[in-house]
Amino acid sequence: MFSRQFEYLAPTSLDDALSALASTPGAKIMSGGQSLIPLMKLRLFSPGTVVDIGRIDGLGDIVERDDHISIGALVRHNQTASDPLVAEHATALGQAAAWTGDHQVRNRGTTCGAMAHADIAADQPAAAIALGATMVARSSSGEREIPAQEFFVDALTSALSDDEILVELRVPTSTNGSTSAYDKLGRRGGHTDYAVAGVAVWVQVTDGSVSDARIGVTGVGTRPSLAEAAASALIGTDGNDEAITDAAALVTDGITVIEDLYGSVEYKTHLAKVFTERALRQALAG
Amino acid sequence: MQVSLTVNGRTQTAEIESRTLLVHYLREHLNLTGTHVGCETSYCGACTVLVDGKAIKSCTMLAVQTEGAAITTIEGLANGELHPVQQGFVERHGLQCGFCTPGMIMSAVALLDENDSPSEDEIRHGIEGNLCRCTGYHNIVKSIEYAAATMRGDDPPASDWEDES
Image (cartoon, rainbow over all chains, first blue to last red; front, side, top):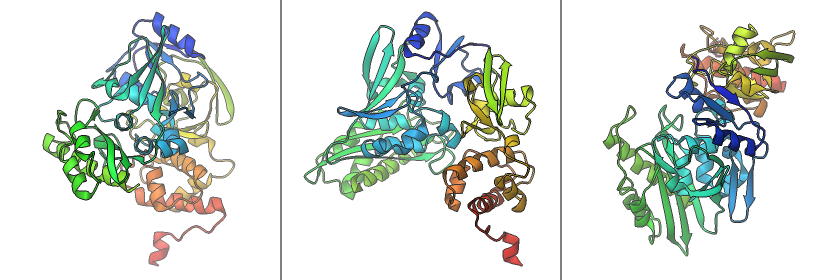
């Protein structure tokens, strides 16, 4: 399978990439290419110009800075999955990255690329919204920060403008008593492949009770969404089994669950509850 | 576009279309047909090669993205004698039709490079990106266990048929 012809640009600086993007209508950014290349080969998408950011230095690091950890645009899934800072401050994101694609895909694909691609069943976006992450978008006219829950607009549609590059994902550093976890059913069973349903949770426990919580759900709707009713139900409880079950029962409230090749509305609703319970138990045990 | 890279230790320079996939560059420009084209949708892993030591799917990478990179294909493994992973596939009957084999072996080489004593579970997860349609996973796992042992200098585990005798 071959894609249609396209012009390939591989700038070595972010400024050059941004000006190429600004001056070339319809140009598309490529980082790892693990979602873009299959789409182009299937000719579902045929950009006239591809701007490969893979040769730009300085985008491939995970660093701790002030009140957050920063994940650069070229950080691969495998790097996110094995990084000690991610494991400490963003456990759910590390787990989601470890269960993205397969080994070969994780060696090429990038965490930020998975965000920008905005697949409805991608794992890491659920973790990003549960962790209260921020997307940093840059264009030739400046930089803006987009809260993760506003970033995912619809299927394969993010809040990025045509002239913007997602240069960084920022995850708040964990404070005392906050933990997170992600669990899913993959399309090929276990944790393998895209999520039929996946749930990321972030909880903060203060003096034995849940003082704050966020729950991000992927795979069941047209975009990763916060399950606000379920999180509200958990806050104020001591996080016991009954509180977890009661909260999980509300996980798809306000989310339009869609049927697809991998499951009915009823089945996916059930899975979302099960994985909310499992992720909450894991986070509250940690 | 021009691309310069190293394939199995030899420097190559080519003038190719930007849409040329790495797998087609290897097979059709360099005649290295050991790397197979299977599903073409990034699922099956038959096209797995090493790029700078990391296993990747060469059907999902543009050849122009490999500028300056070092590629290892199945043809680059044997050095006068078979690579221990290749020998493991011989000793433990790790293939039936052989179509998935080059990709399986490249994934196994990458796995053993990171972990010289993988458990059975780690081996099975290590080849999650490679599909075998002969359902030969059992012997593939045994082949990789054989290779891991010989690469460590240990005696390989007994084969299933030796167990039964």
